[in-house]
Image (cartoon, rainbow, N blue to C red; front, top):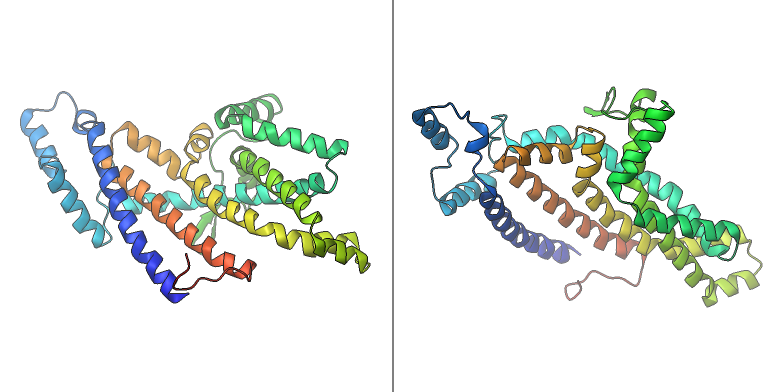
Length: 325
């Protein structure tokens, strides 16, 4: 397993290098941040001084080599707009995004897994059919529309939940979180459910199909022949065997939820990394954009590695050897 991890880490370095080149070139081609960051009334001398100070007077390949040298030392550049290290700015917003993502994925598991099990155990019942119809809606409805409708219903008409912001935060192991207070939890509900809806539908369908497949296996028939209760058969034998694809999806979707929380954070004015990315794109803050995308790529690499390691724990047939994955 150690050789497997080392090989994956070396592959990750190559992936990060290629991604950094693509991201840097793409962001460089978007436009000139000087046109946004500097007042149109600035003199040519002030303009030239700002361009030199930001390092934008050098060719792209020179800027990229400077970036690589700084990145190797853990420095992803300074924000043009805030004049502080980009990575510090992102890490400052990361707890809000991670809290929203963990809450959304927790909600997806808590709701999706039992609903999917029920739909798999009773596929022809009215409840099972209703659950599957609801899962189709979860796949079909666009995130921005769901967010706006939730705001209209629960914030505007009913007035029971806040429509924007994070609410009061409490330090937990030095990290600010909002779920420890009732008001903070209320602020989490609407963006959390908006972000969770697609994953609830996905887990429902995975759990349903996995349950129906497991129920046809011989070991389930033997368990029933031995007189085991339905609760034990479902809770131990069925659930254990459907968890591998579900764990895979949860882990990969967790990375996706963090990466693509941009829309939800923008709709609900949630002060996370996604909103920071949108604000940075609006002012062409290149260091923040590049740093954000590289951190997201690193996150996906880490999540994939964790999923591969979990395979060997959940399924004894999977072995991570030198000739393995």
